[in-house]
Amino acid sequence: LKDDNGQALDHDNPEVIGQSMLGTEVANRVLGVPSGEFDYMQDNEKMFTAFAQVPRTGWSLGALASYAEAESYIDASLRRGLLIGAVLLGAAFLVGSLFSNELLIKPVFRLAEAAGDIAEGNFRTEITLQKADEFGVLANAFRKLQSDLGRLIGEVKAASDLTAELSRAVFRS
Image 1 (cartoon, rainbow, N blue to C red):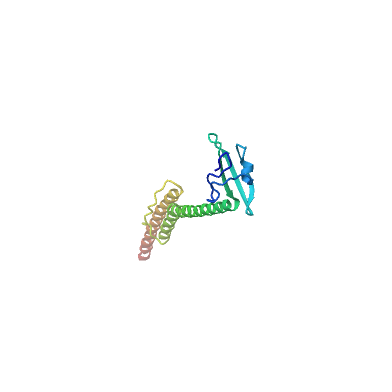
Image 2 (image 1 turned 90 degrees about the vertical axis):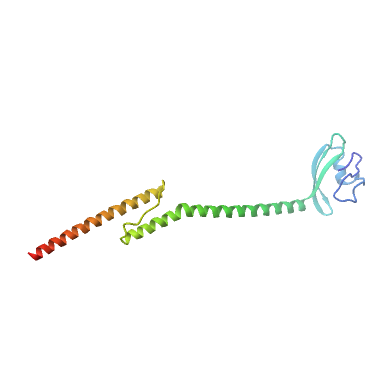
């Protein structure tokens, strides 16, 4: 911040406050111009300045920053953003895994377990999956298969028992 006479009213270097800035590259480029921005070198460091004149006082208010400092801040912000993004992505993956486990994997394992029980001859295995999606359709197909196989095996057993009875009757006569 400098007044209309070029005196520094505020500066990041306390030794400059109260000093005349006339003759410096920054003051020369700011005086008489209402607003603007430019690059310059200070102590072998590339700097950036943006400034505007305060209409009521005529003072120039400017921001001076080194590119190195700005790039350091940008790098830190970028790293922080990437870290936050990675944490959020990991959390989303975890939540997605839990939902997929609950919605996809568990029903498949329950149906596979029921199919194994039926394959071992246990036709009384209860298939409890009640859903209105493809797994529900598959569970209903398993229930029908279970019922049909149970009935078929019952019919085969009845026919086998009848055949055995007839064979014994033929053998006795």
